[in-house]
Length: 301
Image (cartoon, rainbow, N blue to C red; front, side, top):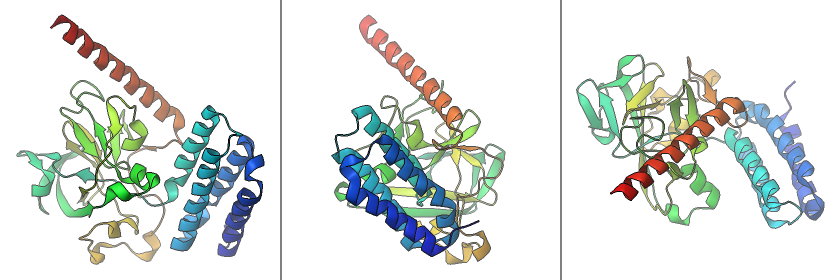
């Protein structure tokens, strides 16, 4: 049974009050319990689709995260676990997946820079060439002044050539942190693949231009030898783009929740964790192999 808006609000208030009054005495179990309570509210927050409640939940998670950082009752390892849990839990607050300017999109006529594409052009997808229905564009500025959390959510993730396998990608490629990449038959966010070696989040960026490509039917699009997601509308995220077309918005009944990706499995830290862990371990082994090969080449040169 779904909670009412007032019940969701009361629960968030209760969590905030506990943090304010007992922060110094909380242990890891208490933190995890509070995070769990916010996680349980997720379906109600999505169903309500209230910006006020979403923002308040996000603020509550920030407080939990900050309290874990400010108090010495947790070990360094426990703090890291809490931070990761908070980041995974906050996934219900809408974020955006995009290609970056300069990305080479594979088309039947060869690679084309994403900014040179136009609606109606054919792009290569896993199921074959598809025409572009819409191209979203958004320029983010003054990013250097953003909070650490805003930077984590919006700074691009750089994937080195061959990081996902031989020739995958064929050359370095950059996606937004929340963009889903097709790896081992599933879709995983770029931010969840970071290993700090061959896949890392770019820092010290003040401005970036993001693009997204919408098809008539969801699919994964080839760019730099790697497939990643086309745009999908959940009724909220189209407004992120500077050139949003209101006529393309879905009906009220289609609004809210995770963007639909029919025919594909999406893995996240808070579900399908085993699959994602296996992928990350595979990519870390790959990174070590690439590092060793580079070192050997330098030594023999």
